[in-house]
Image (cartoon, rainbow over all chains, first blue to last red; front, side, top):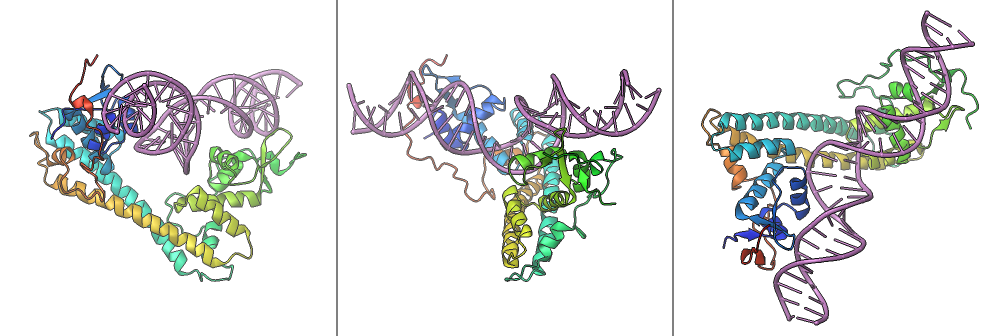
Length: 163
Length: 163
DNA sequence: CATAAACCTTCCTATCATGGGAGGGAAAAG
DNA sequence: CTTTTCCCTCCCATGATAGGAAGGTTTATG
């Protein structure tokens, strides 16, 4: 039932990682270079397929390639301290929190604007108004008009011949 | 107070869109090609800077370039129906909802796993266990072992000389 | 005025994760 | 044996953004 060897397609099916990505992961060094058959085909063991599965799961949880590299190292290390794994996981949770907060802020702003938009034939629309003249945006650091001391943009006085 | 003309740097400062991105937007056709001064420098009017600001706001709300192209078209059209704008906004809200749900599912899984991880010197760790052998993942369509009828991967029988 | 600083130009590269496809060889199925 | 399926490598594309090099322009300063 457990196939001892896989070519890249079977490994892909068995791991859920596309063949394209398997080659990619090899290229960027996330997984070691696969052994090759006489034909030049990559050959994977059940263990290697298991690693690919691990990678797929980590990706599904949103870990970046770099983080996965760390996780793989820890997974391989029988003497890893679970504290390190937990730390990585919680760091990632924090990242997720940030992204979630960002998206929710966008959503809130948009919903608020949409609520006040007639949504009919008439052209007046608070959504466009807001985009055109940002007033109460959620964007934390909108440096609107924080122009650094830039030379008076001579163009404002001699736009010359604009050909 | 309102400068009538801007070079790309001043336009960037005034709009909050980097010079790099202004050139990029021009290249992909999101904004029309800028007029040029004799020197070859791009020259922007206050109106064009206003458009850039519009783009920046839309980006801040997470709209994609394609969506922004639509929004710009509507903004320019004095006879647009606000319904179309609202529709675009609500579509985007839906997209945001999907992403938020995805991220929250990841977060929930990770928090659950982390909660059960000792986080000390010991190597045993449910986080790694889960990555290695996915059981109760939130991933909607994990085709784990949905291997399509693939030829028995002869490699399982004749791994040949793996050089 | 000459020179240096600041600015602009184009073109190329990179990021991140993923996929598509071409051209050509190898293996399994008929 | 022929056809189909699979694999190989190499190149290109996505989306939004940034970095840098090489070289021309403008402005400020001595």
